[in-house]
Length: 327
Image (cartoon, rainbow, N blue to C red):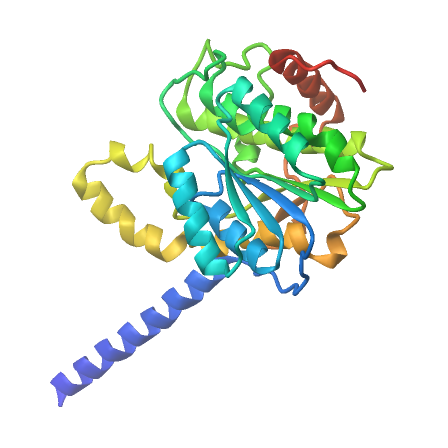
């Protein structure tokens, strides 16, 4: 009798724990895009679309009948993603084009080809990124995370901006991160992190740059047909963490993996806020905002809301990538 009660108690405990885990998993997964809007006739560019949330975004927007340009660094993986996305979306209007955000010349070549070959661009999703890598440099000598996450997208957006303005309704979406709030200042004195390099601190700095870039871009676009918003996709199980896990021994990985499986979003779940910002009808004229879990959120730090910091970052960024500055 006692044994049966013990077994019953254990069974109930396991069931309760299971329900709690499912609840937690759904809670941390965040919101979903409920819009059914189609994108027939629209052209979308997504950077880093060969994997992770970029690929999931590409699949969904291709399903909605958009022409999707996969702007990716690796030709082999880019072409493989093109084939896979065509199969999963049922659309043949998916094309790979080479873009290496760690090379300003590559950004310029990509932009030139797009401007020559595309009649219009309706949505630009600056999604690609690198996180917590060793102290690497881009082709042009910039710190890798700041160079790829911010400067590459900054140049790309500016080079395409006149073409974007030609379309009747355009959205620019910058994939940032909640990590912006862990960076309390813009290192104007050391944008390349030459004096001090801590991988995650530098990543957070680049994500703050994404938020401030969006803020200043939206200000400059007031009165046009182009909107610009940034977002936090959530904590996702993607290749973005490739430089984190390899540094762990096998025992720590055994401890961390169950937590990752339970708490982290899948790439499909992580793509929902990007998709929402790209298609939701109610966001057509919304600009200069920050989103998470498919909802507008308030920026939580003083620096992330600083117009002065945003303007200063824009000016320095333009100088770094060789753009003529105009306000």
